[in-house]
Image (cartoon, each protein chain N blue to C red):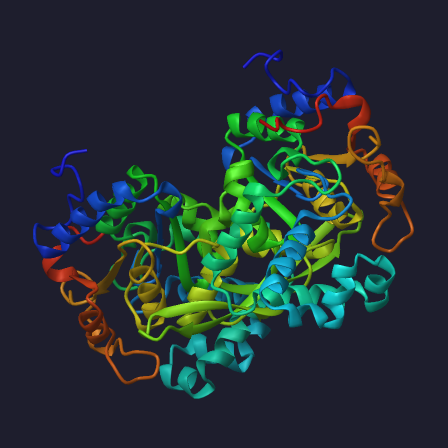
Length: 306
Length: 306
């Protein structure tokens, strides 16, 4: 592959040079150590003004309320459906999230995945109007392709729901289910009326929200290989990026700077570390990570809408 | 591939016919659903008279006691080193296992993997004298190869330690770390003196022993795809085999019958279900699984010792 076909949506400059140089260096790394993990929301696709998973939950709620209006009277759901952010905030995100997760309680994994895929096939971004799959960042798809050409194993390590992301990861990113690590719901093992094994979703989380230090522990326990490349955009990615950058081989940590109010959203100033003390961009500068400016270095931002 | 080069160590007969027929049917299954999981101990390699992981633990204990004789005075270790099975049994397996797991507390994942690999490179079977890697069943390697030729995703779902199996899975079986699901130890996230993230082993399990119903739940949470093929040899594999056999596509459940006292070990009669009520071979017969007789249908049993 020549450099003219490599990373075409990355404008020439220091970030693209750093990536090309890293890709070149990796040819000397044993293939088993060529491992790259990507955060999802805000790193591989747009996360503003709301997470796609939240849009899916809200869509599922609306469909269920259409069949059962009484459901809409539950306090958390009434607040959500009113669109009144003050009412939602007053109840608190954990309570809202738990109520929404409860919508899928009792589903088999196959039923849940089918519902996500049905949503993903037709959903449009709430403000930009583009199909969901075209909210994926074209430069990041090209980066994944370049890593794959070097026989990298590529995974997604997300704070989002594992099963939500798995339902679209092969289709959107070419990443198989076993390489998606996120926030897990617990299952109950049961048997159907014919005595066959069955798993059904509970509304309880298994192992906490996959952010921060937990991303590193979950990479070890669920994937088992340390990355030499990681990409993220928020404080919840900090430890994973540090983990990738500080291993045995030369590592690469890529931070996405959302500074593009015109084509996407500009909100980097809000991305402080989990302890609220230091902006993640400052951590990046101090640690020598590579920060990409979406507004200056990506063209286009999004994958084609076809 | 012609049938003469397919599964050469499987003697002609009903089991081989059933496997060849299944492989042929799979050509119509979508590639994303071509998923096969194998138990490890007693399914991919020999588990008698002791698990290889136990042999590794004992070897590690002996090496540590050589450096620190006082360690050998600890009650659990004294019992183990005496070789007196009565003393070991009196203390109970859980207590012994916990003491042995403690030998690795504080290690990084890399340190633990290096210790396993060092053992695996030189260890010999305690009674048969063969190198550890030649205790792998040749017919099962050929079956994995035939599944891979059909673009199957192949994983190992074991009651053994996840990290122990991961340390050898790529080399012995061609299975990458992320496709190994076993019994997990918990890690502590910490930082080294330079402030870099570090994971260190604890002596606590994370999520219970990976047997029975837990195998099915862990397949869903850690791998995310239901198998259409599963192989096992014990009651701890029952639910996984049922899960593979009863999905959307035609499934295949393979049970290894250890009936070969001459070349390996004969102990099928002991393999009762976890509730102690029904031999796993009886479950297999009732559910229409395929049971392979090691003594009559495999030739050779083991992979070459070279």
